[in-house]
Length: 175
Length: 346
Image (cartoon, rainbow over all chains, first blue to last red; front, side):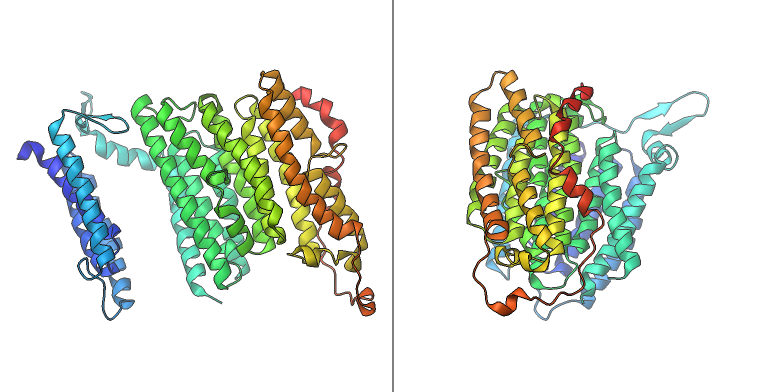
């Protein structure tokens, strides 16, 4: 099972995405987001990215999703929608589940999947050994590069997030 | 809206388009598109009524879908070429998906359905920004990937856009919807020549933006959003009736006005590349556009409908001062003699 752990985790990932895309009430969407965040962290860690997996749990689940959970709890309705309460939601969920099952069977039958492009196996984050400064992993070097060579990306994404908050406040403010 | 917040959000719209136009990394281009989309939503929703909110929602949904398709094309390109630099697109599938995504952003057929509805639901100034500035970013990306665009798909979308833009505008009396269909048709003209000569696409974009700016400013000046209220401009500012006449005929592509220049150049470039039926069809379908422009000029400048006597002495409130209007009017009607200067672009 351990050789297929990434595949199993990615199937659970997609099923939880289907779970919140079928639009139950937001609090249940937050529930499957937690599951998908944890499973995504597992996928990243299997490729050797322990730092980024920790980031997912701390910042994404522990920061953003907690804030989302609190705001949803403030705006909750009396009878929230579950997946089995509404025929439409259950229908969409079952449809997504069916698509995922068919894809899994296709992947398990043939060596490689060729839907839009050929996809057979995935790579790993390489571990460099430069000799003079020891061994370091590519994934942490990527994070370091973001703050040195990629300073413009940090500025642009930071500004986008700030303007996102301003826009949301402006849109929900009303007259 | 708080003026400081409004300025910040407007500057972010500009910044988003600038990032799209000057980035060499596909991911930054996608970020630029998203920044642009996010920041223009409150500008579309400046007045708080259900119509603007519905229009903003429709705009957001279509543009977000287009951004998703763009991201998918970027990733397929990455898988096949291994690099993020924006040059030509290395895989035909990625090229088709990217062309469809950019066509959705521009409002080309068959993705044109959002343009009239969104333009109608928002105010005239927001519609101005929507139909002019928002076209710059997708067009710049189309310009940069033009060597690798599938010719059949792009020409089909262009010709269908010219047809839909002409045919759809025939039954309209609302000015914003007329401008929306005019935008669809002009985008069709621009993308038809993209593969043959991208310079002419940029020329057409420049002249189209000038003419659309002029038209919208004339509408804002007389505060008219329907054909009926436009036909009362003889009463408010008699001079603008002549200016509306000239600018509308320029948009229709009549010589000796500026609007003829891009159409002439495009037809010439297409015939030089041995396609004769296509520019003939395009020129014939542009006549549909000309028809509803002429109908506007007929009711505005050429005819004064019978009216009661007290209407002839209309109370004049303070007229809006629109600074850029005179230069724009001059540029959108008198640029045709400068056509030989296009030789410097080669």
